[in-house]
Length: 176
Ligand SMILES: Nc1ncnc2c1ncn2[C@@H]1O[C@H](COP(=O)(O)OP(=O)(O)OP(=O)(O)O)[C@@H](O)[C@H]1O
Ligand SMILES: O=C(O)C1=C[C@@H](O)[C@@H](O)[C@H](O)C1
Ligand SMILES: [Mg+2]
Image: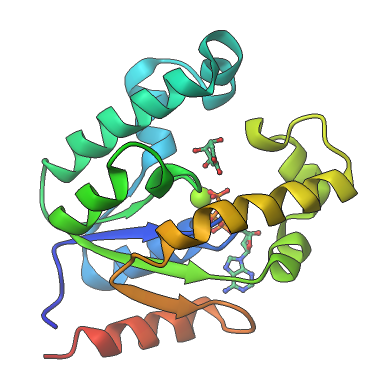
């Protein structure tokens, strides 16, 4: 396929969306956008504050609103979504209608290795959980979310592969 002008990265927290997205955007000379950051900048609140003050439902509404805004805006970007973005409202349909989605498929074991409990515990979805509970939570999130992630146009297996190799694998899809 030709290089798409709107590339949307999906996957679990810690799957490497930010790391890979920045490199991909640099390679293509595109803007790099992070949906969580867009929500924080536009609302003036941190993701944690939104969850605490108004609950997850309000966060999901804001997430869908700003997702649509980004997808309807400028062309030439790589968008890193939140881990839950594809799984709420009609977000995944919208993503696939407006751009090309790429799923970074990374095993739970690898994600736990990368993030560890300190980092996971700081996230609203995992706050207050110990190592064992966080692992179980991540496992149940993957079970709930995988069907959405698998609706992506392109799937890249992210275990044991450097970001540079992931980049050359993806660029292989964009040759023609
Ligand atoms: N290909 C890779 N191999 C090994 N480690 C990686 C790879 N890609 C990212 N990492 C590491 O994994 C951690 C999570 O990566 P990153 O922040 O890019 O994930 P993310 O999907 O953006 O997470 P979040 O959804 O929380 O924003 C970081 O410490 C990063 O350095
Ligand atoms: O996995 C999730 O549901 C989330 C991931 C984060 O990026 C944020 O979008 C938020 O904390 C929810
Ligand atoms: Mg990220």
